Length: 87
Image (tube, rainbow, N blue to C red; front, side):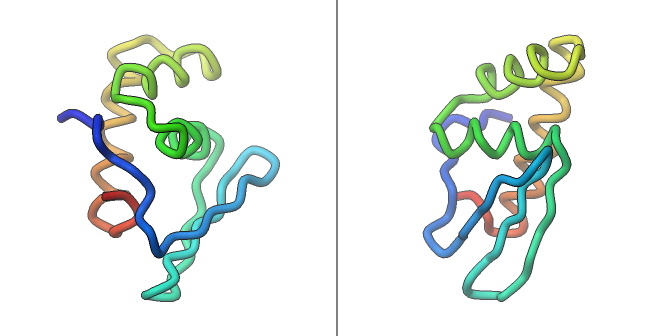
């Protein structure tokens, strides 16, 4: 699965807090909380990074190997897409 082309949905507001991110989907009024790993991926999505760059963020920040980082990026991006937080 490729995350290139994914971007934050228009009706989503996000705030970065200490080690996490809080996301509000304005249309559904649902809040989501991302842990430190998820918050790092979210920052990369906001910056327009592709799948490889998102995984590299996790490798740098969390002492995880590339294959594990890629699996985690794929898993999280799919959940964000299903929640309509990214397009």
